[in-house]
Image (cartoon, rainbow over all chains, first blue to last red; front, side, top):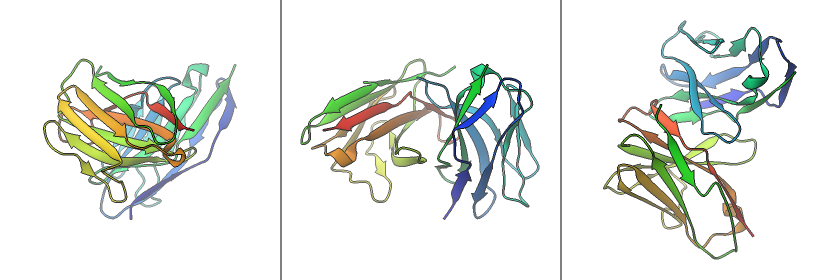
Length: 109
Length: 116
């Protein structure tokens, strides 16, 4: 069946560091891909998405490119801030959302 | 943006009791609401999908007599964990959708249930 695998956390970085959170998927067909973020005490929020191969989703300085050849949708940001500390979830959608386990990101000043 | 609330945010109960969790869409009417369960360091697992005024659709392996879902209005869905046991301890998250497309879900902050 369809599945999503993302890197285990926590990931700890210093402010202004470069961020990559890896996400790979297994799916039949051509699912849409998503990154959601959950800030402490808040609900999950859609961060970005891509609906077809080679699409790049971007928001708040974060980017992810839908790579069909490597079945990946890695999340990147060039310079992280303390306020980016949160849990990040990669997900795909066939007829429902299939979720990765989440990666906790900790940014230290 | 669309806001979804959950109440309570955390609850501790004794084994054998029932617990009700509310999910409300605060500033929009939700055609569809979803209930998820999350175990530590694991992904969210969809438990059920409910549409206002109709019976919930449960995912395979989810006991519908144990996890009662009521979607009585376009702004409120409730999940009742009946005869709770320690293995029901988990983080329960609801989401609400404006329409039928599952990618426009708005999530509540979750409810931590601990069964002693």
